[in-house]
Amino acid sequence: MADVIISVENLTRKYGDLVAVDGISFSVVRGSTFAFLGPNGAGKSTTISCLTTLAPFEGKIEIAGRKVGRDDEEIDAEIGVVFQQSLLDPTLTVFDILQTRAKFYGIKRPEARAKIDKMADLIEIREILGRRYGSLSGGQQRRVDIARALIHNPKILFLDEPTTGLDPQGRQLVWETVALLQKELGLTVFLTTHYMEETERANQVYIIDHGHIIAHGTPHRLRAKYANNQLRLQPKDQTLPARLDKMGIKYDVKDDILAIDIETPENALELLDQVRGLISDFEFVHGNMDDVFLKLTGKDLREGKR
Amino acid sequence: MKSLQLRSLIARNLRVYFSDPVGVFLSLIGAMIVVFLYIIFLSNMQVDGIMARFPMLERGEVENLMNTWLMAGAGVVAAATTGLGAMITFVNDRSSKRFNDFLVSPIRRGTLTLGYICANIIVSSAMTVTVFLFGVVYSVIGGAELTWTDFGWSLAALLLCVVSFSALFGFIGSLLKTANSFSATSVVITVMLGFLAGVYLPIGQFPETVNNVVSVLPFSQGASLVRSYMMRSSLDKLATTSKPAADYLKEFLGVKISVGDFSIEYWMIAVILGAIAITFAVLMTLIITRKVR
Image (cartoon, rainbow over all chains, first blue to last red; front, top):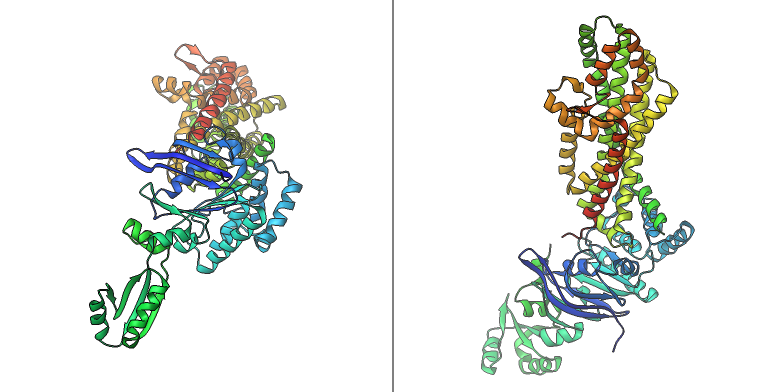
């Protein structure tokens, strides 16, 4: 059995009549990256709130061998949390914020300074240490949030939609930072996201909708199971649709392009051979997590995007 | 570790509060406004009223008495309003969800509460002492007598009010969820406090039932305790001219208060204020400890 650091059994969380999370179970292996994927309102943040000792719940959660709800203080010492919003003190300087937070974990001033110093280079926040948090850009605030979450060398890093609201460059930087830290510090990373591409780097992906887990597995496995590859053909003239009809191949037409769901690249090559003379262009598209989600929930994940 | 956490929380709360100098300034002005309003509008009226009743008194002595009366009351109002004002840090922390950042740290919720209360007490003490010193200087320059001992005891009584009201309003603040509800509550409480402590009007001008109700509340009690030291010399001086006048004014001005026939002694007030401090600190901890949402 793998080294499990988070184990969740039958987690349920209700707000009055509304069941936000409905009896979900999963476990996270030490040192891995675990992604929770789902549209807004699916129950991702609620799950994180329960895991991070913030919200009451029904069911059982164990983190690093300790029970949430009973050993909260010990658990808090082992986890770092990056919240959905950047919410540190806007009027204080980055250095002050980090130093104060370090003391929450019993880290005294000289040691805290050394920590901040190390973090400053690792997370590239040295030049903003003296600036007020509120005056920073979204991406800079995010990096400070990560530094704050890691100030006490936690074993597990929780990231709740860490890249929402960032520009592509900022998102890239956040992910590079997280990847680097994970390698450097041996962290377990638990993240929620509604960006498909961000789950590709996870070891395990759990897809959640309406409080239920509707699928899980490695990104590769999920794609293989739920996402179709697609071959897109640009016909030279009307003979192509006729030929495909005759061959009994189904296709969708969109902007003159015929799209065919196809299992493997091999199959695609065979088909291409047969219609070679009838097409002016083609494209082979791998199934992605968007397709997985679409297939599982019947809705486009982007609808849930802010 | 606990004390390190507490110290860093207090330092953080103070830093956050004082990082808004305009807010600090307005809060101080809010506390002083009673003093200015009184000096400009009310002082003469009150003195005239007392002179009409006791024509044998010397006008200058009555003026001194009323100055010390007002300054003691202003100090108590300042203690209460600034104790509430400092809770803005907590309300903002919670409405912005910044509070969650503390909750995922290994801090006992009691430590967290104490961090806010202690910061409130420090903020409130600083503001209250400023208002009080201003008041003392104003009264003494005007000619009022105040011995060092009485000055020391009035200050101590005032600080007891600060501690007590910081916990009380810390609790009220912990029930408020947004900055809007907080400012609305502050306005209502600030306006009411001037009356509840018998500062805008002497408690003797209230109808009897109102007088009794107000006397049950800790604000008039705190004021009574502070006045007992602050006004001692002035009252003693008046008593040499007319003992009955001095006795009457003691009750009329709320130096000595009672509910019906039950006289509220100064030691009781000290006990009540202490009990309020402890009770509401515990209640505030319970409110903050609840896992919500």
